[in-house]
Figure (tube, rainbow, N blue to C red):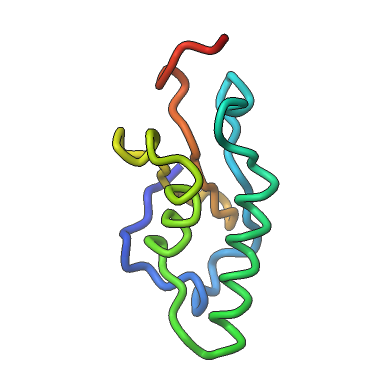
Length: 100
């Protein structure tokens, strides 16, 4: 997976064909993040930016995940990467907290 710079404009990108929430080996953080909600909010914001002919950057996508989990953002999450035309939003690291 390749990281994308924060100012990369997703709304005008021809290389991104899909969007997905990356699931760590713990699947997700059940304490604070619901990936389907984050995915829906990112796609809504992305579509609105395209409709309004405004840029939608990697930082905008990351801010949706950060808004749902302040603890993650203090530790450098979420992260964004791309592989084979799919944009992945990584919500949490594999070992960011002990799972209960």
